[in-house]
Each structure stands twice: as C-alpha cells, then as structure tokens.
Image (cartoon, rainbow, N blue to C red; front, side, top):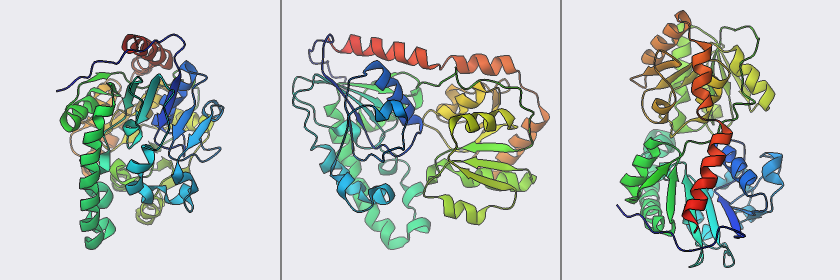
Amino acid sequence: MRESAPRQSSAAGARVVLVHDWLTGMRGGEKVLESLCRLFPDAPIYTLLHIPGSVSELIERHPIRTSLIQRLPKPERYYRHYLPLFPSVIELFDLDDVDVVISTSHCAAKAVVPTGRAVHICYCHSPMRYAWDQFDAYFGAERVGAVSNAALRLVMAWLARWDRATANRVDRFVANSSFVAGRITRYYNRRASVLHPPVDTQFFTPGGEALEQYFLVVSALVPYKRIDVAILAAAQLDVPLKIVGTGPELARLQAMAGPNVEFTGALDPETLRDAYRRAQALVLPAAEDFGIVPVESLACGRPVIALGYGGATETVVPGETGLLVDRNTPDAFADAMAEAGRRSFDLSAMRARADKFGRERFESAFASLVAETVK
C-alpha cells in the first residue's frame, strides 16, 4: 500500500482552498465542510454545483467557485445525470497559486489537480459508491431496465478505473471511519488516517418532550439507504414511521408506504431536534460509511436501531445505546424495533457516547493533522 510523503509547504500563511463535490443540501458531508470553513475562514470553495440557499450561512459566506455543470440545463434537478462529465470538469479548476488543497469527497472532489508544490489532503467520505460496491443499488436492471443497466455498467467500470487512477493526486487520505479506511485500502491501495466527522452535540441535546410512538428515519432518499426496509418493518408492526429527508427515491417510497408512514421532507434544525427527542428510536437500515445521524439521535437521548455492519458499529454500543441488526431484512428490523419498544436505554450512556464525536474534537484534531502534514 502506497503512502505518499507530503510535499513541502509552509503552514503559516499558506493559501488554502476547499474542494467539495456539490452544494445541494446540508447532509453529513456539508457538516464536515462547515467545520473546515471555521478552520479556514478565508478559503474559497470549489465545487461542481452550488444551489444558492441550500447550505448553511457559514458555507455561503465563503467565495464559491463552480464548474461548467452549473451552466448545464436544470443542474439542480439533473446533476446526477451529468456524472460522466465529472472527471473532465473537476480537472479544469485552476489551482496554480494554491499551497494547500483540502478536498471532502465521495465522488470526484479528490481528483482535483493541484500544482506540483501544493499539498493535497482528502477527507474521504467514501470511494465512489456507485462505481464500486453499490452499482446494483443505484443501477440494477429492476431499477433502470436491462439496456440501461448494461450501458451503465460500462460507464461505471470506466469511472472506477478513473477513480483508482486519480487517487495518486492525494498526498494524505483521512477517512471518516475505519470502515471507509478499509475501502480506501481495498480500492485505492492507500492507507488512511481515521477521524470521525463532527456532530454538533451542543445543539443536539436531550429535551423534556414526551415520547411518541413513532420510529424515525433521517436520510437522503437514495437507493443504498434501504429506506424500503424500514417502511416494510413498520408495516409489519403497524407502528408509525416518520421519514425526514428528500431525494430521487421519494416517489417510489411513497408508492409503497401505507398510512402509517409520514414523509416530512427536509426539516429545519430545531424541528429535526424535536423529532429526534420524541421518537421511540432512530432506524438505520443501510450500511453507513459513518453516519452522523445516529450520533445526533444519541445526543438527543434516543437509541439507534442499525444494521450491524459499517460505520454504525463504530458509534452504536449494542444493548447500551441501541441495537445492531444482523440482517438487512424487514423481518429482522421489525424484531429489533419491537425489542427497542420493550427496553429502556440509559440516557447518560447515550449522551456520553455522542460526546465522543463532538465538533470541537473534530476541528482540533483536523487542525493538528493539517499542521503535521503541511511542513
């Protein structure tokens, strides 16, 4: 496994730029970007696409420089269709006078081309999922049809080769979990430091609200999140399920959901915090790369029912702060949800677990990591 030696650069007074895949909403990656904006308040942000008003005021205050994707027809709606263009477009950013590049990447941002003197640190949320191990979840024949499936398989094989080849543009990888560090080793043949992402445990706190009977899903509505499993599990138990989030899977999920399921769309932070505080438990049916949402739930004093694979195994303590489910099936999740309804979980244990992932910890550790790398 190759670990590049960092190129020499001065940390003091260095010109830093941030590179992010796209700015279309406030998800886990954007919360990491917020922390980087605090650490580097003068750094411009380079991104494939920016939908004004879709991210926090802190991010919006930075100079935001977009790519050619911004000028294509209806990019806010169709940007995922422009995926084959991302490799060529990300390489067009002009970073000639930059000393430090910090990319936050789950798609193309890590492939930006720095100058020969610049140090490139990539905070990797995941290697490109749909090009590696999530192809069928996104582009299976049952979703897109046999012809499109065959064509997309060729496109994604090409993207996977490009994704691997451009890993050498990064001097240091930082993974958001040990699970993702393993994927970086497997797909890029590179080692990665592990630094769990920031959670605002000063904002997400327990409250005095009365518990309600519903279970909660907070997620982007995309295929690999397997929200259909939660819907079918709730139907088996005939219990209310509240789904917070938006995404391309909305229509399909609404079509399969019964009257016990409420789709709230995106919520403002205060309303989301209230939803956590009142829920019986958070349900997480997918293998998460890390999962900021479960830590937010724990910070609010509510247990997590998660698939026992991936990032959730690094945040959920079985029997203490929630339950880990060994199979990603409606039956298995229904059993776990029923068990969670019968059990009591210790509030102090959940809160203490969440505090291990606080925002201040992340920002202090990332600043040290940059100082150590940029010499």
